[in-house]
Length: 205
Image (tube, rainbow, N blue to C red):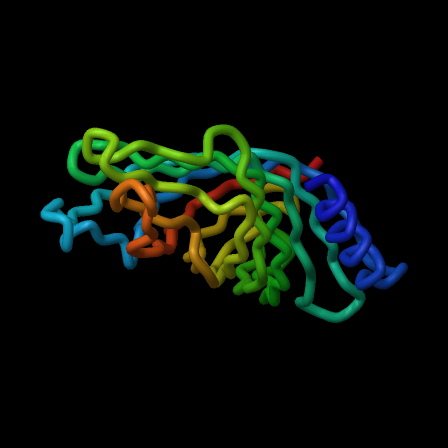
C-alpha cells in the first residue's frame, strides 16, 4: 500500500505546475453509506440494508493553479463506514486518497463557491471479513477499491472549506459468500458496492 500511495503522490506532484500555490490543512467529516447489490434473499435472509453514519479524518493539501478558478485538492483520510443488515453491522476501515479537480467562482475576497470531481483510491485496513447469519455466510471487504467523487463546496476567508459530495463505487467494495457443502465450502453469491453521501470541513493553515 505504501508503494501505491507513493506513486499517487508522485503523479499528483508531476501534474502540478511549479507556479501553483500550495496550502496544507486538516480535513474531517461524516458519511452515510448505502450498500447496493447486496443480497442474501435466495438463502431466505431478509435483504434489508440500513445506512449508518461513519466518519473520516486526515491531512489534506490544496493546489491553486495559475488558471482563474481552477485547482486540485488531495487528502489521505482514515475512513470508517458502517451499514446494518438483519441485525448485524458491516464495518469497514480504510485509508482513502481522494484527488479532486475543482472549479470555483469568487464572491469577492471573502468567499468562493466551487464544484469538484475526481477519483478516490481506497486501501482496506483492519479486519476485512464479517461472519453473517450464524456463520452460514460471510462478508469480505476487498483490499483496495476505486471510487469517484462529485460535489459542491465553499471556501471562506481562504482558510475554511466546506463540502458535500456523493462518493460512487466504481467496482465491487466486497463480496458475500455462503457455505456450500464440503467440496466447495464457500460460494460467492453476490458482490456489493458501498456508495456514500459525505459532508466535510477542511481548515488550511
